[in-house]
Length: 246
Image 1 (cartoon, rainbow, N blue to C red):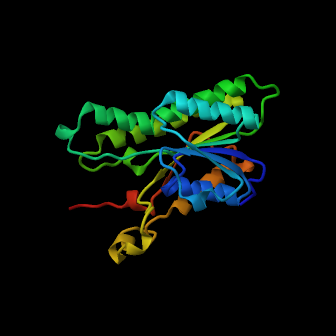
Image 2: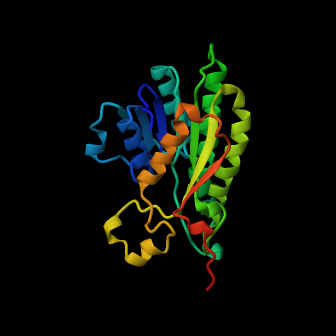
């Protein structure tokens, strides 16, 4: 993997889980990374001089916009935008209030539009126009498969996949490619507590880790990979290719 030295990265939802793995990977690759989250990361995670944290509720358009505009002012531009933030709230359909559905959409899907639009507006005012840009949106295999009570989450992740290919076309003149990643089971807490059946049900023989997603982000961001555009990469250990009957 080529170095990300000199690249300026903004990650939403970067304090824990997949987002944290992405932030760590890009910092390790030499990038300067700003990330936001509603939850503050632990103090050890802020030790790198190449990482900047902003406490932001992404459902607050003004707050999210403010962070991006500050980065544009301080850095001049960004090179990579990773829309990772997401929540999952599962409940029986008949017991799910509309407000809960709206909250999931406002957290998972709406910020992808807000951040991408802001970057497009910023680049429209730049001269000369930078020749490099990457947006990576984190969706989920739930965009094409579901469990009971997952309507809000499934709708938000399906929206991210569709928004990705729409943005790829709208941003084509800005030299920004737009792709998304749909993770399957990615264990973000206690990997050692997983059982043998947990791992063995995956054709790849194991449950995924945040690093699996982070490596794919680095791949998409390789300057030579600008011919990959508008795509959705499923990273699930092969689970969505299994035929399962009960």
